[in-house]
Structures are given as structure tokens and as C-alpha cells.
Image 1 (tube, rainbow, N blue to C red):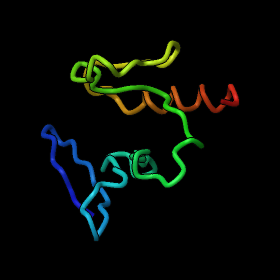
Image 2 (tube, rainbow, N blue to C red):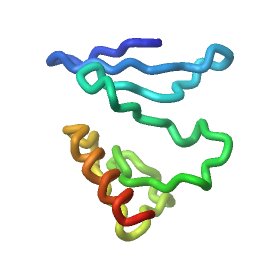
Image 3 (cartoon, rainbow, N blue to C red):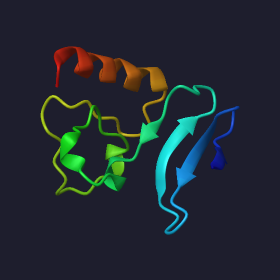
Image 4 (cartoon, rainbow, N blue to C red):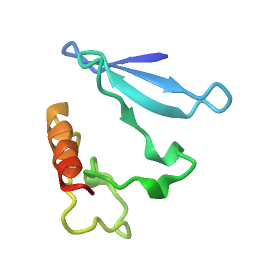
Length: 94
């Protein structure tokens, strides 16, 4: 596990592939029950759909965000917002 310090007491641990050093998922240190999965590392990505897009300020102009998917120009700010969106999606059965 790698540990990253974002200042103001915010830390995140990430698990990386031992072979290629690609980060697979991240775990906020203050929320040990939460793991942020990097969907691009999955073998079958079609089984998942995004609950939100982050850092859209730096997205390429050709990348289109579908209607109905929340987007954030930077980071979400509070991880609870992502949890809320995930719970809403789960309740909708999507």
C-alpha cells in the first residue's frame, strides 16, 4: 500500500499493481470502510457505470459527459457526496 498526504490531515492509501505500478484502488485514511475503485483497471468495465465525473475542468473537449451524471470541475470535496450518489444509484436499481 502507498500512502499519500494531501495536507490538513487528509491521507489516502492506494494499492498498486506489483508488476506495472498502476494504482488499482484508493482508501481514504479517515474512512476505512470506503474504497475508490479505478474502473479502468477492471477486466469487464461494462458491468459498471459512473455515479459522477470528477476533475472535469481538465477533461478533453471530445469527452462527453452523459446527461444525468453529476460532474465536478475538481475533486468532490467531501467523500460523503460520492456515497450519497452511490446510494441513490443503488436505490434506483441502476
